[in-house]
Structures are given as structure tokens and as C-alpha cells.
Length: 140
Image (cartoon, rainbow, N blue to C red; front, side):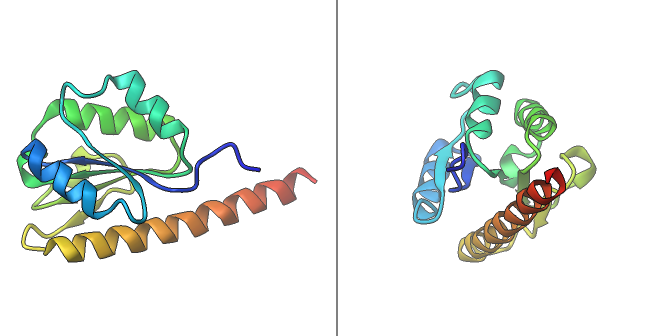
């Protein structure tokens, strides 16, 4: 039995809490999704919640890209969690986000964002499984 929850944890940080909640509700069929507001979670709680899952994501829209608190949370989580990823919707400078971040066009439909997130989560789950298997083989 694995000590991690294999369902991806996805934090949604959109311009308004209503938008975040609506999007989170739409992706709950394949993830554990939460709307993220500035006051909702502390740095330590964010990192601790991510550590309980095999993979964790942060989805940010154009309205929240300039939020320094969100960027700091993302960078801290990426340092602490090998399989933490960011998906930035809109015109983004990916140098300001953690490595392995994904940028999507601002005119991408929400269904396209959801499909991409579902596919990327599945690919990441496969990569994690392969890495864990290789590490087990190397320890033999």
C-alpha cells in the first residue's frame, strides 16, 4: 500500500472565488480540487496538503498571475514536492513560475483546459509509477 493518495490534488486560483469554485467543481470527477483564495491556506498548510498526494497542481488564470503570494506558494511547493506542477492560463512569462509549468492560451476554452489537465495528470501518474518502479529496482 502506498502512503500517498494517487488522486491528483488540484488548487484553482482564479480571479474570483466563484470562478475558482465553479472550475474546481467541474474537475472533481478526476481530482481532489480546491479553490484557493489568499487567506484560505498558509504556506505550511499548502505544502503539507501537497505532500499527502502523489501529484499536485496549481491552476492560475490571467487575473491571478501577478499575485506574489500565489507565486511564492507555487515556488515553495515545487521545492518541497517533486511532482508539483503549475498550469498558467493566459499570456504568461514561465520564467516567473516553477520549472515544468505549463502555459495555455488565454482564449483556451475551459473544456480544453480541463482535458489538458486530465491528460497531463494521467501522464504524470504514469511517470511517477515508472520512477517509483525504477527506484525499487535500483535498491535491489
